[in-house]
Image (cartoon, rainbow, N blue to C red; front, side):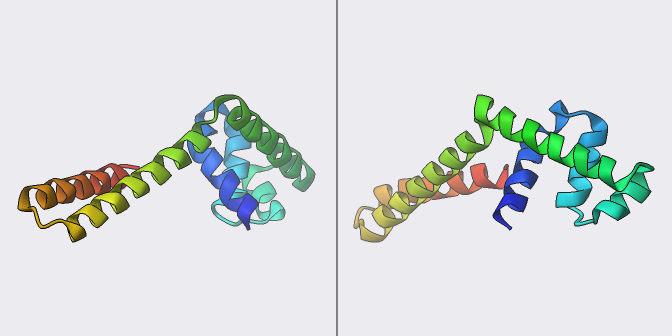
Length: 118
């Protein structure tokens, strides 16, 4: 299951760098949960051709991530935003200062906005 999520996320980040046929086959397999036979029928190629295309595309996706690290960086930023929001919630909960509480709530709102734009 973890690999499925990883490949699906990598498709989101690097899909436009792939050949359309490989991108489509991999998308149908990982995101639409179609079988190799179903994809082969839809694309008009053999089941083995679909499998080869998906394996090749997976290698490319992991290679792109190894070289560019966009998904890794995204995860780091997301974790950092979560930490910032948690710290701001702690400040807001423990502060007797209305101005400080207001600033902390502003930070929490901004983090939420940034995460909604993902």
